[in-house]
Image 1: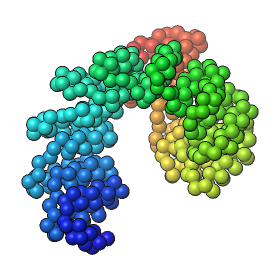
Image 2 (image 1 turned 90 degrees about the vertical axis):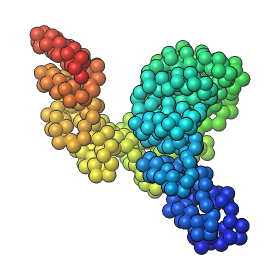
Image 3 (image 1 turned 180 degrees about the vertical axis):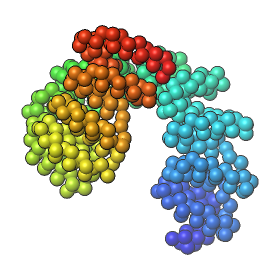
Image 4 (image 1 turned 120 degrees about the vertical axis):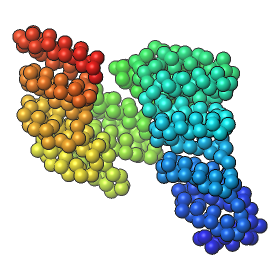
Amino acid sequence: MVGKVSRFFMDRKLSTKLLNITITSFCKTKELEKAETVIIDGLRLGILPDVVTYNCLVDAYGRFVNIDAAYLVLDRMKQAGIHPDIITYNSLLAGAARRCLVNRSMEFFEEMCRRNIHPDVWSYNSFIHCFFKAGKPDQAYRVFQDMVMKNVSPSLTTFNIMINGLCKSDNVNNAMALFRHLQTYGLTPQIDTYNTLIDGLCKAGKQSAARRILKELEESGHRPNAITYTTVMKCCFKSGKFQQGLETLVLMQQKGYTFDGFAYCTAAGALVKKGRLEEASNHMEEMSSSGIVLDMVYYNTKMNMYCKEQNLEAANEVVDEMDKLGMESDIYTHTIMIKGLCDTGNTLEAELLLDKIKNKNCESSLAATNTVVHTLGKAGHIDHAVMMVDNMDVKDSFTYSSLIHNLCRARRFHDASKLLLSCLRNGVKILKSVKRAVIDGLRYSGYRGDAKKLRAKLRIMRILY
C-alpha cells in the first residue's frame, strides 16, 4: 500500500496538498498508522508536511486515541518549525470536550491565549460544551459571558449548546430566557433549537410552556419533524395524558412525517405500562409491516410486552430471533427478561440467568441484580434480598433505595434507618420518598422519638455531606 502511495505522489508531481488529502482520508477511517507512514514516505520524496498535515493528526488522535497523543503532535510541529494555529487548538478543545476533560480544556484555552491565538466561536463552543458535560453550568455560563464581552459573536450552535446544557442542568427558565434573546444577536431559531427547548421543558414538567413553544415553531414557518412530535408524545405519556400522546402519533402519520421506529416503540412502551397490551401489540405489528428497520429498541419493547402478558415462551422466542439476527442482548434485554421471570414467581430461574450474565457486562449485571433484589423484597423475601446485596461487588443508589424501601415494607424500620444513615455517610444518594418512608414508618409504629432523632441526623448530614 505504502509503495503505491509513494508512486502516486511521484506521478502527481509531489504535492503537499495531495499528501494532506491522503492523510485526511486515512485519519477519517481511523488508519492512523498508515497516515503516519504516508508522512514518512512524503519526507523521503521531499514533500514537507505543513500545518494542515499536523492539524489532521491532532484531530484524529484526539478523536480516536486520547488527548495526550493529540497534544504530543504539537512537539512534532515545533521540531518541524511549524506554528500551531486556531484550528490546532480548536481540535484539542473539541477532543477534551468529547472526553469531558475540564482541566485540559482550561490548559489549552489558556495556552492558545498566551500564544496570542485569539479564540473564535468554535473555541468557545467546545469550552462551554465541556463545562456542561462536566456538570458545571455556572462556569459554562461565565465562559458564554466572557465570549460576548470579548466581541466574539455567538452562533446558533452556541445557543443550541447553551439551551441544551441549561435544560439538562435543571435551569430551564434560564434556557427559555436565552431563547428569547436569540434575535438580539441577529439569529433565528431553527428546528434543532426548538426541539432542544421543547424537550427540556417537557422533562422539567412544564407542558404548557412546551405547547407554547410548539405553537411558535409552527407559526415560524418551520415544519415540526419526527423528533419534535416524538418529544411531545413522550411528554404526554409522562404526564399521564395517554390519549393526547396517541393522538400525536396519529397526527404524525396523517401529516406524512418521516419517522423511525422510536415513535412506535415510545407509544407501545407507554401502553404496556398502562396495561393496554392489545393496543401495544397493534402498534408493534404496524411498525413491523411499515418497512421500518427493526432495531434493538423494537425487540426489547416487544419482549417487555410479552413479559407483561406473562408469556415467557414468546419472550424467549424474541431473544432467539435477536440471536439469529446477530443482535447482542443489552442492559434492557437482560433486565426485562429477569423482571419477567421474577414477576411470574420464577426467582430461582432469574438468579440462574443473572449468574450467566454477570461475567459478560458489569453494568447489565447491576441493573438485572437490582431487579431481582427489588422483586425478592417486594415478595416478602427480605432476608434473601439483604444477603444478595451483601454479596454484590457493585452497588448503586437504586440498590440501596430499593432495599431500604423493602425493609420498610417488612416493617423493619430500625434496620432501614441504620442502612439509610450508613448510605448517606458514604455519599450514596437515597430517594426522598424512601427517606420519608423510614421516618413515617418509625413514627406510626410508635417510635416517635427515634423518628425525631433520625430527622435531626438527616438535617445535619444535609449540611455536612
